[in-house]
Length: 294
Image 1 (tube, rainbow, N blue to C red):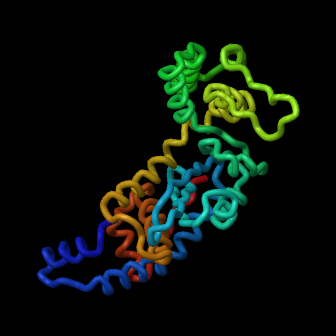
Image 2 (cartoon, rainbow, N blue to C red; image 1 turned 120 degrees about the vertical axis):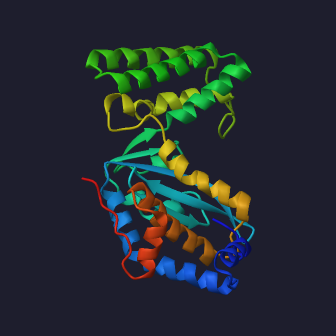
């Protein structure tokens, strides 16, 4: 997370003797090799989990755009750096294609293509998009939809919802979507033309809310499903901090080593183990092996 030059300075301040960047790099490479058994357990644990969160963010590797992908639960975190964002990266990471529970994400199309999992969409994203529609277009239905989603969330957190209450929420959801389409209808394709017709921002969102209704409202009928994808977003937030502090990765190897070590350390912290102790244990040949919750 810290530039090599800053690590050298800090090391010299603490022990009175500087070390070269090469020594630091070899130590980090050694740590990445040592935590391999833990990464295997993290991967297997994720594929067996009932609910897994997925997300990705752009990073720079040798000045080129790449993507840091994350798959995580409350107890496990697994990072992969890839040159692509979509299908190729998801397949190479291997977590989502081997899951069979719930996949929580922001609705990115390549995620939705996996049919062996049940999908749940991030409603924090929906609330932000609805707020944009309220501010930009004074869309009353969007304001009402915001309130409805938050009411659903509060009811799910505070009560055991009856089937009748859930049905009422779902009926109101459908009413607001229809109200939205009355205000922002789908524009038909003109005669003798081909290709997609550009739709209004509000219409595009309404299409998504209608098409993926069950995924948007998954948290309502399934208490184990969260309202949002904040867990994955939190696990990616540190990447933005690293970019501000250290800039881009110099090499692909460096990026891959970062992903491996960070997967190990974040998982250790989630399971109540000090990052420093986890790193020390790996260096002496007994890496922390994460527990897999039942």
